[in-house]
Length: 171
Image 1 (cartoon, helix red, strand yellow):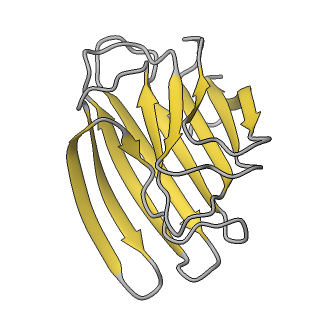
Image 2 (image 1 turned 120 degrees about the vertical axis):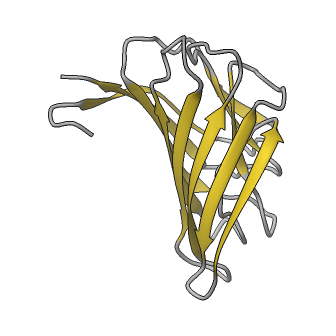
């Protein structure tokens, strides 16, 4: 990030009850250079869960991701293409006592002439399966500004899971 840039909080959602579908942040203004979505205290009652992103309600197979993951013993890499969502990466064994955190950096989100690149970092620091990942993803829909973001989960997101969306304001 260049010197002088500022993070501006655009929206925060903290789940007061378990959510089985999605959290939507919409009406995103196009006045920032990039977006950062921080999801913290990600919990559920299952042994696994994945946090996914979808842009502008696009549910077509326009997303792809490449992962680097590690758990202190084993490192792996993988790639998925023609997906209907962006995957956050490593997410094994999340629970109410072993939450995860993920940061999504969404570059050049307001540009209407290029596909969108997303870098994400996921960490689960405790529990039976601590680990981390770094993921690069691409949204290959017809180039459009991102005006809404859906955060989705493959199982129920727990109470207290928090999403904060920041705009990066260039100096």
